[in-house]
Image (cartoon, rainbow, N blue to C red; front, side):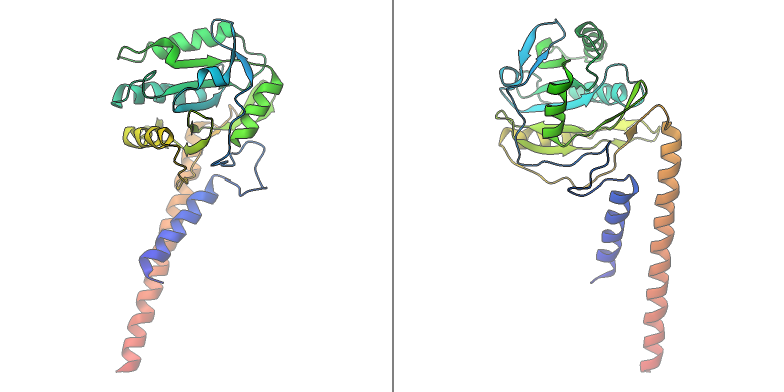
Length: 265
């Protein structure tokens, strides 16, 4: 195996294990298990921000981006939705025409009024004219929420008045097939960052019903007990440790090669 392949493999393993992403059958109570190729149950009923009952199958008529959040959350949920609003501004696709967005609250105690407040807040950040119905903010009972989240492989855990969960966007086609998971990265300020090109590609893949495996599995855990700066510090320490480890391996390999060269002469 070439050195570059060894380094690449090491980095993938390091990054995928750093944030506790688990394999199939080993999902953390607040983790994500990718159910690529499986289908969301579209017969579930929720309430939209107007307080009306809606069925998922009546909303999903084109590629749809789903994010599981709760509207009171300021640690991850709101920053993630703010980043989605920013991506809407940057991508040359039109919500309502090319794709839809559905935010689903994982807190059964949240109300349509709260959903409406969050919807107004987020739509005010979109600087292009879009149909307000192209981004739905739903609330529902615990049974509907659990079924939808479970089908998507999205697991959360209540701790006191907050919920532990991951930040991820789930792309499905018009029939509810799960095509891709997009996990946000970070910018230099430590805020969420979604590449417009990656977002657009995910929408286009979902439009074709194409299932795409996720490579990067770096997720942020949503919890008021785990401050964002602390998470970034932990990640930086582990990442730097990995870099120094790789440098050490390369140095050993280089010395071994030089020693073998001298022995041959």
